[in-house]
Image 1 (cartoon, rainbow, N blue to C red):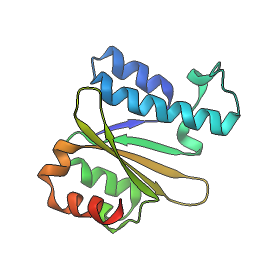
Image 2 (tube, rainbow, N blue to C red):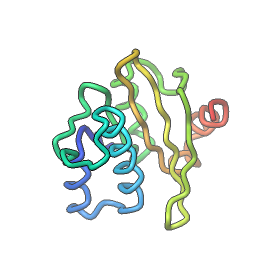
Image 3 (tube, rainbow, N blue to C red):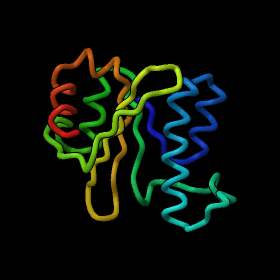
Image 4 (cartoon, rainbow, N blue to C red):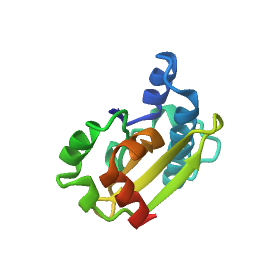
Length: 132
């Protein structure tokens, strides 16, 4: 599981050779949040953005990450009611799901779940189907 708390985490993951198509989706979401928070469309201070005040972004890497996410959420993932779940087709034709879970009015968690994990875990697959 990768926890992304700032734009700097994206830069670090890119340097480590992480999947560029997945990182592009998460980077775009961070840019969207930055613009919504600051109103600055120039993205001039994007590298200074820290998400800890508004939420986290979590990228699942395998099925076992569900347990770690549940520790963050303090409840079972499949027991949550996401605000939305988007199915995103990547440039390499793979699919990733983005689930947005609000913890309160000011703090939320974006969970990015590769289709590979969804196909391996029937509970997650049912949760996505019921909430998209």
